[in-house]
Image 1: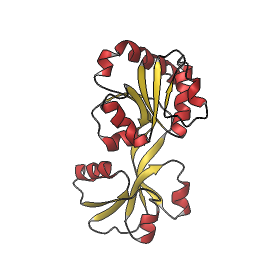
Image 2: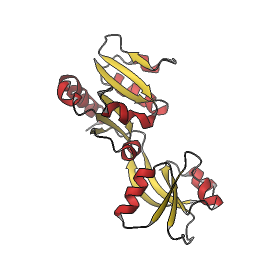
Image 3: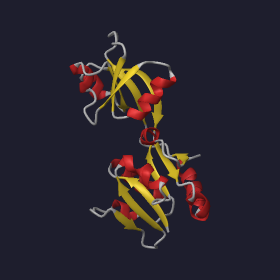
Length: 205
């Protein structure tokens, strides 16, 4: 049996369609249920539903053999696992945003929930930045003077525009990624590799 970690929410719906198109009896993923563990009728796959930030942890520790998670979550987690495939859906950008033309303070104050990623980014540039961790409504930080800029996911940009903010820099392209446990990729190669091949055909690689 192949154990799969999936993020709850919208991403899970896209994953359900992906698995079904790859010939897996994963219709159970589309059913309304509060269960956190589901198995396919043929007993070949077991799915764990976890918070997005926990998907890399379940895969790194081998509880799940594979998982599907956003690239932003992977960057932040820095987990010891294999990133196998860019699935090409749930696309967005990880951006720096703020008020265009406003002079920043020194050191630059950056509000984000991606604390580890932001620290690595500014350290790699040799820039002095104070990273302020927030868990939601990140756009509020520059509006209230808490930060100069934010470092966050941008899809349509509607929330930024509604609050007078602009994308100052697009830093990372984000999409859903297939990840694998390093040991599982060896011990369950007969199950994982054909699945990867099927996914590649589905996404047109």
